[in-house]
Length: 185
Image (tube, rainbow, N blue to C red; front, side, top):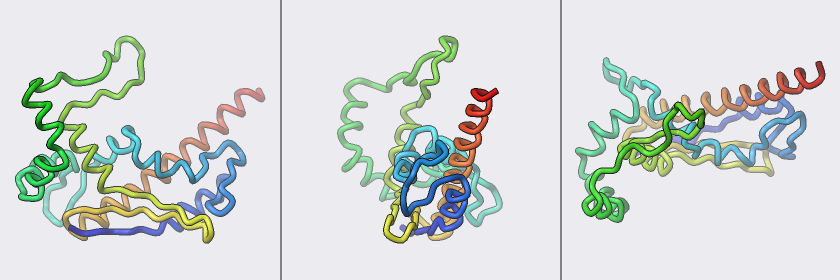
């Protein structure tokens, strides 16, 4: 396994442009406080976007993390160990109850509840264990740590995860400004 830590200095600079920095952690201008970044990185919607992003891990064909997990990780010895140690309670439940239906509600009722299959939940659990975001308030630094089977894979996932977080923060700030503008008009 490889571990990649990425200093999000550019994200910190970008965050400062939009009214917040990691040092004082203010919410000036309706921005998301950096204290919430770890929760964003662990959220289902964020991880689902990360899970289905195609990556090219040195091969000719690109593969997303969902397919990678089911093709490579499940077949590995480590995957089997995880399945029968960490995942043992869920494995026993699956044996007793059987395979559950897809969780969630139908999109016809207008709900924004995210629907996940059992396979997606397993991959989301793996991604939650693999991604960590740390904030050093003293020096104003945000670090994203990604653990993947190879160093190249960790680097690619960390780069995309940082860009995804940056896009989320910018999108939130832009939406907030538009909302404020509509209120003023």
